[in-house]
Length: 208
Image (cartoon, rainbow, N blue to C red; front, side):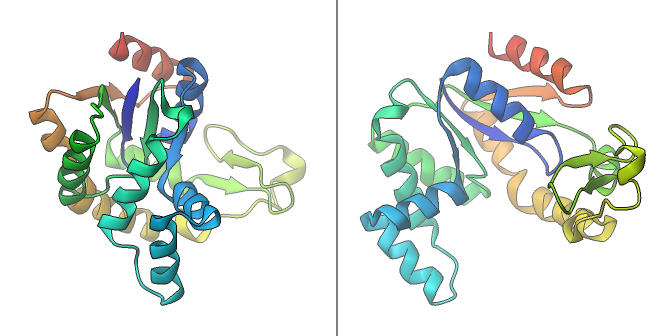
């Protein structure tokens, strides 16, 4: 199963990714993890990324896509992989499609977890974390125990202002990849407005 996981921030991608990789026995490839690994291993693309980062610049799309191709050529991707966090824009999706074609790799599905903006804001702004253990709670869906109620904190990127900014960026930059993959017949839409186990069941149905 060769797939890309897409959805707005707070849609539950991380939770579902963990279940999918366990079910399908495929590696979860996030852009950040892949970039750090390539730099550590000293691959050609990793060296280029390291130069850019040390200069305080963003790593170019060409380099990131090159690292994706390097990564999926590894033995653990023989049975498939899950890309998460990339592509983030339509030009990236188009360029990645070209390079995958050149590498003889065909995507099976782009899994799109849909959740309305108002629910995303509710999910994200209600999150709290234990500063000592890092445990994550939610004021409405998974309240912290009474003894931690006064200790849990809200991360800076979980405020309403930050959440709205992230959603705006998602809709302007990332959402346009959906019609691109729809044109290729790869999109499978899943309603993410449910308990995690129910969303997992919906995903299994969509992938069947």
